[in-house]
Image (cartoon, rainbow, N blue to C red; front, side, top):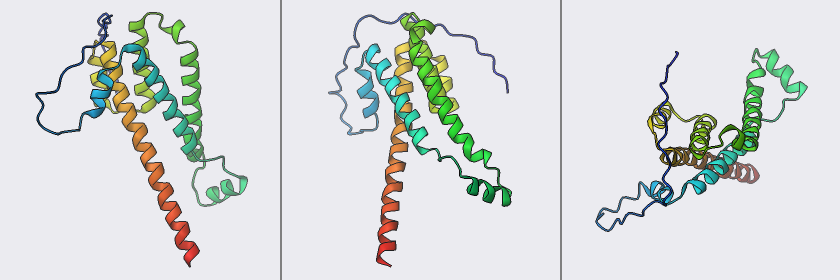
Length: 186
């Protein structure tokens, strides 16, 4: 499907720091939006640094999770069973490409986007692409005309993705450790 997007230009960034809002009137104890509160107090430069660092963490996780190169024996076993080993290596190549794109992006960010407004936009869009965020989030981000708010939204979503990946890795390591202990008992 082809989508035509009319570019919504960003508003000029505010030069004053964000004003902290008092939540004294909030009597309910919902802690569902703690992440939003954490990012709401950050200025634009901190959001940029944290978004780039979170993208780097995501790429590093993806590189570490991707399977190692297959040995010739593994390739022949897969071929004998009719399984294409190209699919296994695609994840690795995609992770390496993602790392290369991020490195080039970071090294030439000032050349690509000299104005802060453009920088906020390009960082948020790349974070969406790298984090493979869902279409609803991408749609919201395209509609947002405040670059700092866009960064906050992307950072929240990307941080959730990174956190879930870390939780999965930890759960897998605990499961693997329990499996090893069970084997030792037998």
